[in-house]
Length: 99
Image (tube, rainbow, N blue to C red; front, side):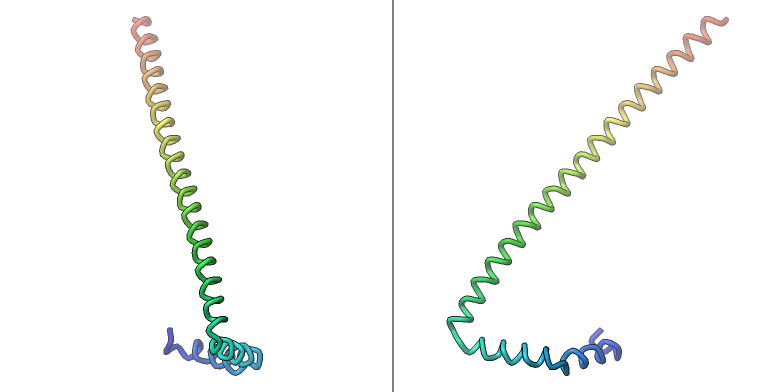
């Protein structure tokens, strides 16, 4: 990807943009201040923790949904089996009475 000429051209456009250059200069200046760096690190830690909690909640939701689907599939299998047995019994009774 990095060697892709189209990618290189897009990166060149981004890095030559005045807004990008200003943002990078501001970031470089901010990183010189140790207090700002600590503040940024704390903010990033909090965001990572929040994101991790959200991901865990989503994983739990997905697992519960998958489990619910498994249970529903099992219920359908049992229902299908019961109906098959019922219809076979009806067929057996109807064929045995007709003779």
